[in-house]
Length: 639
Image (cartoon, rainbow, N blue to C red):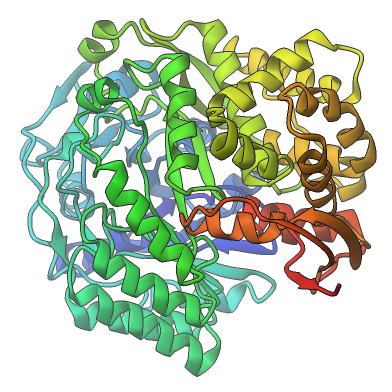
């Protein structure tokens, strides 16, 4: 019997971790391979290696491996390389197989890394099973979708389109993870739920694009069995692997099964889905189900990636009209349901002006709370990652270390990296730095609400574009370098500059909140709120520069400063001359009404006050996802 090991190390979990993902990809490979009698008769499955353990300790416990299969993505490829190299050094006859999204379609991994023997391209269930069978004779010529070494030559076999998935077994239901859970009672486990595979869209930045596979459905019996297994085994968090959950009507049944499972056992506790870009009615119904049992902390995804028509053309994407999204977002807000939007910085054709205008347009349609901006990663198996596309748009990248925000500083003992786009023919590196800084400021000032009341009033009453208001803060900071607010700005700008040059990705720590690593905008928020009085004192000259009538300015300023949550601040009473709160509540549901003059006293109460920065950082800034938790949540007129 030949000893087989499968390696899929978690994104951050190391020895002693409190949480970890079950190795789903490795599990489906094992479950399918060992349905083969030939594999069962010739291979002994030894272990899933899924924690980021010390590599020497992993080597020490391995027993004469004949095959070691590695699942690769950006968060574990460097670890896999080091472990694979040491396996090959100690056991030269061991066959090292690399597969996964981070394995390029070409032969480059074999040319670059002598310790790798076989590359599996595309979906892996049938390919991996066939490789194990072929390894018994040493002849891999009949196995499709691989590249391998033979007599000092690298050979690539025929690429075939992925087939049906209905008969693929489930690693959960078949018991492949039972021992992991039993042997690690100290770990709270998360899991992947895959109800369909494939994507009808061909967005250039996504590594689904080159696969050219139609969307295929797993049987409902398998899905319901997996949900039952996850519920019984107390899986805390479930990540949905589907590209477009909600696309099919049966997804409503799946969502209900998840809700039923949680109501029955308390598990899974949380769920996160990638929602359909087209079937908005189904998505709304699913998000409503999840909201009722507090299942999905993030809510619906109303993604754009870019609002520039030129960019959308370049990446092969088409968005719904902004009027449609305004109506949809209003519907979510009116029902108290969460929805967030995504943009990507660095897409071909984007300029600084078009990028910040896109963020301004998000605010205009009512996305005042949560928007996310991602640096564009050049994925090796995306359309954008191909050499002709890179050359056509003048794409330049740097290798940037991946930091796991909110984890302790030592989460990665072996650094992992992404290739991020920092320059294109339409976006200079200097403008990339300013754009990165802009969106961190916009997320802090608007998403987290530090200056949102002013931005909204200026937009509606003085026709000041949102992007002009926030872009103006950069000029203000640059012109007043001695201020506290300017020093914080320079710190995140310097961080963006360092990243653009491929320097070490510096960890941003807010000392009062412990040794967790913070995202740049969160770092800004925590620091600015740590001295809220100084923040507003130093921002006042900028706010005054817009010539807001003095009585309105006073009410805006008082409301804006006191509505923000900070640790230990249970409640406050403020006297206002204008109904700022009612005015903003109408804007949030896209029902603008003129600001009313109204002398009154508001009592602002935080019904879930945090008494230390560590709790505040976790539950308000991180879990609160910007604007959803930033403001005191009970507002009463008391006089």
